[in-house]
Amino acid sequence: MAYQPKFPPEPLYPLSFIRMVRGIPKLVFEEVEPNEMPDPYYSLLVHEGDMTSRLEAYHDEEVKVRKLSSSNDGKAYFREVVLETVGTKKVTEYGAIEITLKNLEDEQRALVLEGKQPLGGILNDARIPYSSAPRAFLKVVPDNFMVEAFGAVEADHLYGRSNEITSYNGDTIARIVEILPSL
View 1 (cartoon, rainbow, N blue to C red):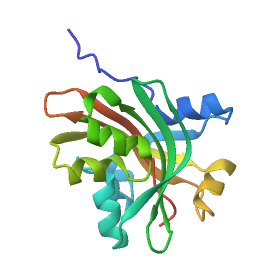
View 2 (cartoon, rainbow, N blue to C red; view 1 turned 180 degrees about the vertical axis):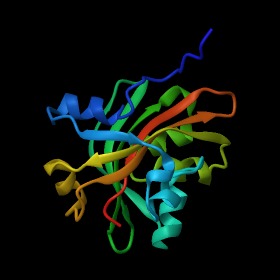
View 3 (tube, one colour; view 1 turned 135 degrees about the vertical axis):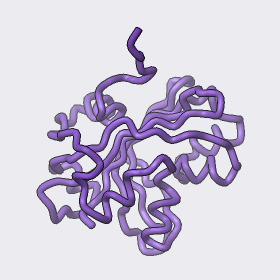
């Protein structure tokens, strides 16, 4: 029997879902092989770790969440965000996340719902073991909404990834789409 993934097959999920709910047109994108991404995108995206620590190391500054939209049905928490550096407010990522709330402890769940800190930072600070598994690497054509979220885009396309974070026992903690600005 063939392997059946536990997550939706569409690589832009949950960003595609959030944009649909908000009435924002679908993004034009293509899946790419990791080796098709130039540096620094390759080093920032092609790994099995969290993006929070990679972005903080690259920008030499802590990052925080600027929430663009969110919803919570008590089971799953969705948010569309921009990550930006704390001091200089430089935008480091645009994306969306679906977090399975029952798979977090109460303290981490409260921090997630507060909406100020990226999930990777919350998990790392609490020393919660997890696995990060990229599902797809993306080449995205920025639309007007993304340009507005980033403040400006100086490229015809941007790079990103679709990722799934699971707990040590294999439960899905989050599904994420992470798109980086022009670097």
